[in-house]
Length: 184
Image 1 (tube, rainbow, N blue to C red):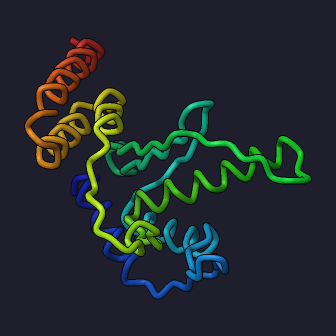
Image 2 (cartoon, rainbow, N blue to C red; image 1 turned 90 degrees about the vertical axis):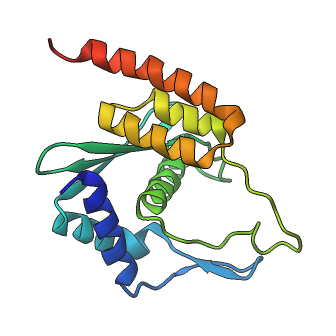
């Protein structure tokens, strides 16, 4: 079974769980998932599907690698690093806060966890446009030809024709880089 099929099966199993949101935004009046509300169940579901998630951070990106433990295929999810400036906290505590939030958001992305959306709660319809820069980064950061192909196909389906030339150019460039790395 491909890693994509396993991830979709894991998402379905995860969403069948009855989890409680313990986080609460009292100002805006909604509840949300804290990392502790779903991390252990998510890891258990991943284990059932022979998947492992590895989270890492550098100055610019938070990264989650989802690895298929059977064949080592992987999916990579990234998020730009943010910063925190909590009152009365030391620098390392601010770093910890950022990493905790980043870890939460990577898991939310990996499992397609639905959270409160302030935009949906607004009074008027909002046109949502795909983030072309993020899509191009995903193509440029693809680690395998399979991931590159999946990113390319998704981009071509979601983006208007005006952006497709840039997607093709970035895909061809990354394909050349990945092909160059492959042993002869």
